Length: 203
Image (cartoon, rainbow, N blue to C red; front, side, top):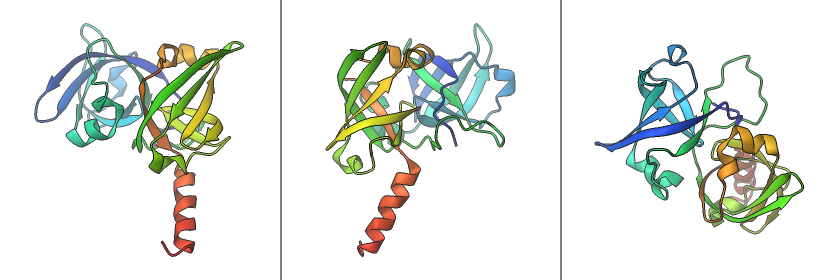
């Protein structure tokens, strides 16, 4: 489990297609404190560490299955050397829950359709997959590329969020552009509320 509070910006060092896709990611994390098999959310995708190293800089390797590539933004904007990634290590018991409960299991891919400056902040509008739109509510939470964000407004399948300067500085959101594919994870509570409503309707 994660919180959607980004704690490092990683950088893809290399990508190799084996049976699965193998990616090597540079990190500011102390790899001495990471174990093989640990989970790290990379742009919101929960991936398992399969190798670690410290030369020439701290790095970890992850394997990315064909299913994950197909269901996430990785399949639309294949990672390549130099790509920056939002990173978060798995939540530990007793850690501060500063965002919201995030599983790292991406539900779909949204698309950036608008970017506008509002004061010191940036308003970004997204188009969500139609099947996920019902789970997104004004003032509710979503995880976008692993970042816990509050929804400002919803119009059908289109929704917007506001990015304050701090968020843009400590995540990759400072690079956002129209047309970007974005990993979208809906709020777990919204998922269960919708399911309970379906059950009451006999669906």
